[in-house]
Image (tube, rainbow, N blue to C red; front, side, top):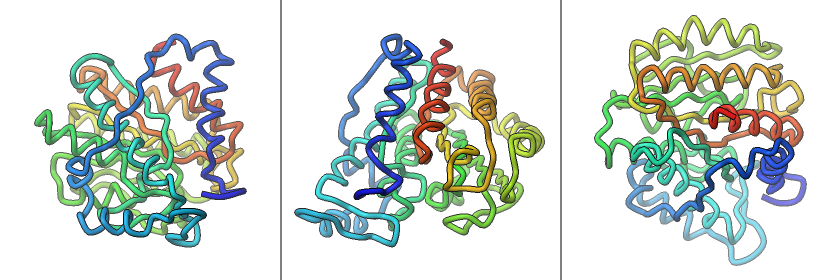
Length: 292
């Protein structure tokens, strides 16, 4: 998205580098994602929106979608493969080729609504994956766990009123995109944490609000919008999560999948902009998913 932009290519590099440092990279199965199809995108996005993005794609340099979100000539190509990765990961998990999968992708997706790009997001990757699970595998109960520090307003809006999908979201209160709910409703369970909150506050809220609701819902697959920008080193937020907190969250996501969904879990990278903590926490997340 341009020089000095936090959503930078190095975000994926530090994850790979940390997996290599931990001697984990070669122990994982790697897949090159296919491009998402228009049919798959249309399950969650409006046709006019897809046409609009293609029409404004610059031939060179950048174009601003909003103050924070920019496109270059290769943006939609990258977004196409990011969304395609969620589709492939869903297929791998649903057909038993993998018990779970992590999509190391950018741009992120959970702010993209059915008809609007924002917050560095163009296609809603996790929503595309969840909709694919419904359309191709007939699933009736899908949990989307979103622990990015920013409310996943796009995912929330896309699945509002859809009784097959429940969103379990925690985020910093009063932070971009300045949306969000509190407590439980028919669409999910929401945990807005005030600035300054740390891992202890998060764990109590998850145990009291999320876990009983996930147990009652009994999801057939778990999707995770894995954002690591609530880390105390990340200047994008005022939450103070530690490496151990993200490990704990990963354990809870895996336990939910094991209890109800035969271990089926698809995790998709969202935010995380301090490169040091992003590399550590994402690699630990992947390592735990792989039981390494």
